[in-house]
Length: 392
Image (cartoon, rainbow, N blue to C red; front, side, top):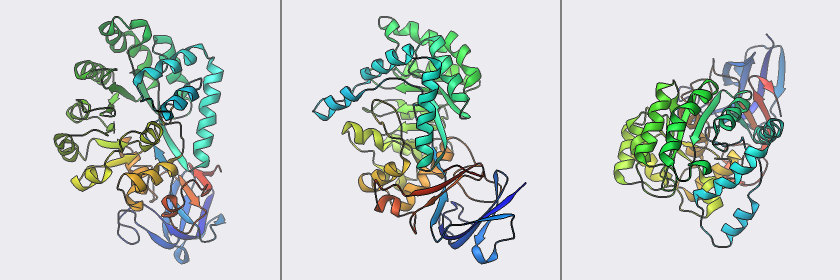
């Protein structure tokens, strides 16, 4: 295999405390990274880098692990500009808006859905995202959910079955019948394409008993649970996620002390994934990241990219929001958007830059990762390597 050295890195974030300055970010100044095939072969001071076949001069820029976006909804069609415009004019968000996207997605061709997915993936990659999870949830029929997952699985290994996004409009008068479908025929058709099972546990979507039945059925089918939990109100989602050892409880906006304690006790199993794009786009209450971090909870940051409540693919933007409005430091926000996302996907090979890890990294047109929050909205990602290949 060809080896490549990225040299003259001003500041390298490894997310390995055994490296560099010993902090959670494992910072190395005046650093180099050696890539061998699709893996990291070496990191350390630039003046100690081994010889390689080729070299790339970072010219003093900062380098970070590629962002790990562990929560997105990218298989969809249509546009919800009118809903956003109305909400910005004073109307509150409700789960009912999802039905608009369901109708558009059902009507779209496979080719149109895949083209839209790929467009968003390229958009995210240009901003430093090298791993993404994405869900179904805009089909809500056996055929449409299965095709969404099939399309997604062609582009990522992190695919989530979310037939339980909302109760299908076709079952508006029979929610129990829809739960039976989600846990039966639909699950059978979708499980071969997915790694994860998810449920929107929220008033207006699925209650605790329904969510438990859906996640339990998914687990029995070999899928790993994750939960849309406590986004719009206090509810059972976080406690259910911890009880069922879900990989993540996502949103975590409305939490009791008992919820925070439960997440802290489950820090090695269940990650609290915070999605500030949703609060930004709905003018909702911000999640209190400081409260979670101080309690010892493992926190991830993600975009929640979707056409209704968080139409952004920008992890740098979410980092800036988390620092400005959620009480995170720039170091904590970057860790959560990289290593934290990897934890939420139960991956040890991404979100870090250490020997043996996948060679996913982004070069910033800045001397430090702090600029991600310091210069919000500025396109700072100047180069991206994904699986060892320079892609942007």
